[in-house]
Amino acid sequence: MRIGNLTLSSPFLLAPLAGVSDKSFRKLCLDAGAALVFTEMVSAKALHYRDKKTEAMLDTGKDEKAVGYQLFGDEPGMLREAAEMLDARPNSVLDLNMGCPVPKVVKNGEGSALMKDPEKAAKLIEAMIVGSGTGKPVTAKIRLGWDAGHINAVETARLLEAAGASAITVHGRTREQFYSGRADWRMIAEVKRAVNIPVTGNGDIYTGEDAVRLMRESGADGVMIARGALGNPWIFEEALAALSGDEYVPPAPAEKIDMCIRHAKLVAADKGERSAVLEMRKHVAWYTKGLPGAARLRSEVNGLPKLADVLGELESYRAQF
Image 1: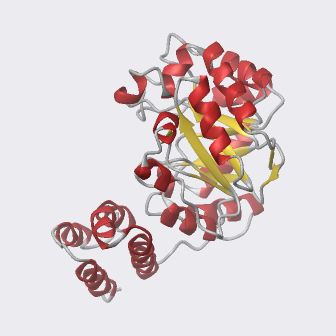
Image 2: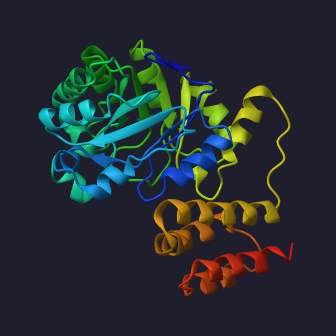
């Protein structure tokens, strides 16, 4: 798969996930076979004002060979400036967020609110391209439309392509749906037929077979995996196996706990013990979903204040397998 001047090793990408796709999680997914990993979405306005927490979200590891920086905003000048700030970073993509449905983002005319004004979105893409003087690929992640009565993904994709976008990712839901209901892969196929740039499909990918089926049914060039990767970075291995027809052996319970422990240590090294303790509460729930005794483990971990105690609890739990 090729996006602008960036050639990817496979068609499987990690989506930008707020509060999840930090440097530690991206590393685990890259190690499992993700070809391109996206940061959490970042405010162009916050970058303009040099917000330290926002800048920290863009920190990448030295082994991140292909990274997507997802920006959100509604002002061409701010997005151009953000693109300029990120232009020197190699092997990367700049992505415009047109899919976030969260009210506090939408009320400012950002995220999926841009689906109501695709002409404006095209101008934002143009501004990002100007800011990226080295020709870094500029892409966008869109939804099907604002609601069921205003499905305009095809029109929007055409306008973004004309503005110079190197690729489009389509989440097969409207803003009104948020993350409920079924993703409509048929509309992803319509977008693919309408443009000449790569199209990546997104929505309802929980197994490797789901990823391959989306590509077959829609003709999409790639698949962006979001919720299916929570507690399951192995989904990229599974997708690669499904694509090649190879057998895939899912991780045993002990392997899941080992990965969880590794994840916790990576977060601690990157953000400190306190952040690791708090952030791993949700990750522990995802890694142990469906395992015996997981509810008790989650209850214990949620009350622990120190990383050593969290790791000790995980190791004790692992010993039963």
